Length: 123
Image: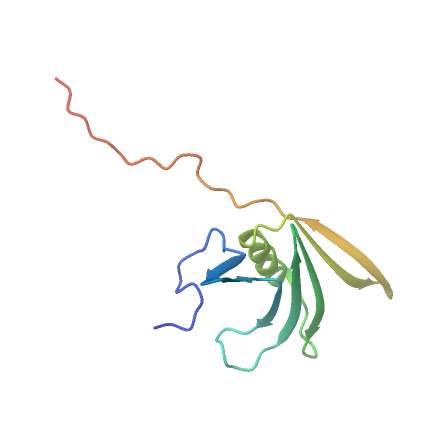
């Protein structure tokens, strides 16, 4: 059994809650780590809080000489899409000033109709 959460299979969306008996467990806070294999030392960490259709990203820390890059941004964007978030909010420093940013998250594109191919013999 693989340690990878998706076992290599892409996820279109994830449930935000799970019911076990009389309890509903709702995903509200997520700790994200940048690492290629779980359990290995990581190079970046962030906290995400999900509230309604919004995600709030804070506590982003990277190792020295490691930058938050486009690939990292894409991973966070995909996660927000999978959680069906509509907007992601985060703060960042720009010109030595703390700036609040907001990114609109478009829903995952799902094929409008998944049809099986039907063969029909015609004379």
